[in-house]
Image 1 (tube, rainbow, N blue to C red):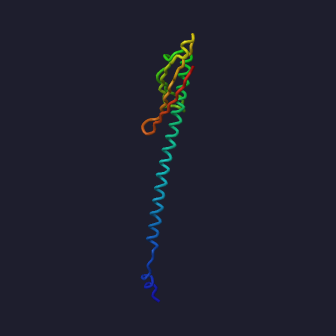
Image 2 (cartoon, rainbow, N blue to C red):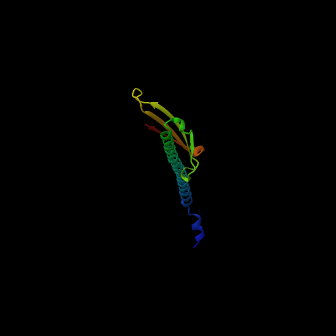
Image 3 (cartoon, rainbow, N blue to C red):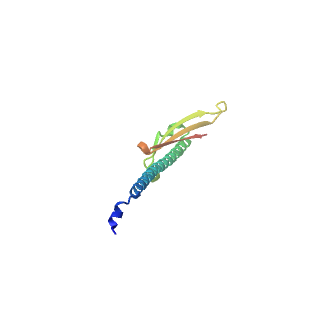
Length: 136
C-alpha cells in the first residue's frame, strides 16, 4: 500500500561495485597507454639503429673506394655526411690504418684496416654503429 516505505529500506552494492569496475578499467587503460608509448620509443630507436648501421656501411664503402684508387690511407676523408633522404641527418666518421704484409718478399702486400662509425639522430634518439673492413 505504501510503496515509498519499501524503497527506503532497500540497500544495495551496485554503486561500490560500479566504482570498483571503473577504477580497474581506468588502471588497465593507463597501463596499456604506457606500454604503447614504450613500444613506440623502442621502434623509433630500432629504426635509428638501422639507419646508423647503413651509414657506417656506406662510409666504409666510400673509404674502400678511396683507398683502392689512391693506394694509401691519406686519401680517406675523416668524415662523410649523407644527403640522401634515407640517411638524412646521418654521418660516418672514418679512420684508416695500413700494415705491410710479407715485407721480405719484393712487392709485398699492404693491408688497409678501415673503421667506419655511423651516427644518426640526436639526444635520446641517437644511435651509433661501427663497421670494420680490411682491404688487401
